[in-house]
Image 1 (tube, helix red, strand yellow):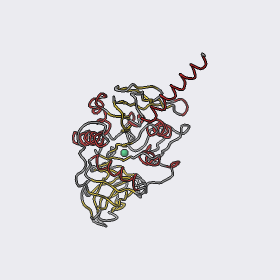
Image 2 (image 1 turned 180 degrees about the vertical axis):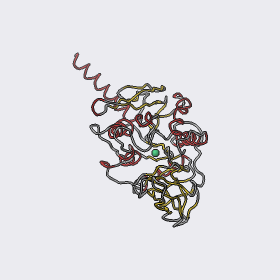
Image 3 (image 1 turned 90 degrees about the vertical axis):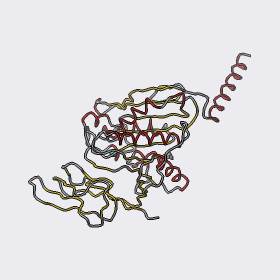
Image 4 (image 1 turned 60 degrees about the vertical axis):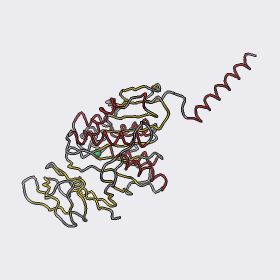
Length: 354
Ligand SMILES: [Zn+2]
C-alpha cells in the first residue's frame, strides 16, 4: 500500500514536471550561478571565476526574473571594460526594469572583464594580454581571459535565448554608433537577428558574414551565441572612453526597445526606421609601432585611396600615410596617439545601395 501510494505520488510529480516542461513556466525559479531566483524578483551577485594559480576574479551580474513567462535575454557589457556607456546603461536599466512588469528573464552582465576594468586596459586583459572577444568559447583551465570566456559561455550564453553583446569605441577609438548583424547562413534565423539589430535602433547596421562557423573557435561572444542557435547582435555606441549622456541614452533606449520587440515589457519598440546598411567593412591595421595622427574624423565619408591618417615613429619621423581601401564611411578611427603594429587604425564600411 505504502509503496503504491508513493508510486502514485511519484507519477503525479512526474506529470507536474512534464506539465512545467510543456508550458515552460509555472512561476518556477530561474537557476543562475548555482542559486535559485524566484519569479518576480531581482538578484545581483558576483559569479566567481577561479583563475590560474588561485588568483581568481568575478563577474558582477544582475538577474531580473519576471513574474510572467517569456524569453531569457542576456545583456553583456564590459567584454572590453574601457567601454563605459554600455556598462553605465545597464546600472540604470537595473533600476528601470520592474520584475513585476517583466515577462521572461533578463541576465545583465555588468562588467564581463573585471580585471580589465580595474586596471583600465584597452582591448586586452591585464593578466594575459589577450582580447576577451577573441578567445571564445574559452577554456576553464586556460588563462584568465579564457576562463572568463568559458564562464560567460556556460552561465550566460547557456542560460539565454537571445543575447546582446554591448560594446562601443574602446578608450582609444572614435566611433559612430552601429550594430553588427552577423549572418549565419540560415535564412529564418538570420531574419530574427536582423530584427534584433533593427530593434536596438542604432543608425548603421553592418551585414557581417565574416565570422567563423566553428563553435570550438567561435572567437566572439555574439558569434558563440549564434553558433549555439541563439539570436545575437553586437552593438557599438559610445567612444574614446567617454561617459557622455548621449551614448548612455542610446544604449538604454536600445535595450528597452529590444525588450519591447521580444514582448518582455509593454510598449512599442523603437527600431531604426531607415538605417544605413553596410555590406562590406575592413579594419585597417598598422604596419608600424609609433604614433598615429588622424586626418579625418569618425563618421566622415572617405573615398578609395584617401589619406585617413599618418604614422610617425617614436622619433617623430614620417613612416606612412594610411589610406582608405575603398570608398565608404569611417566607422571608427583611432583617436589617441599610440599605434602598434598589427593593431587597428580605423574601420571603413561600404554603404549598401538599394
Ligand atoms: Zn569592444
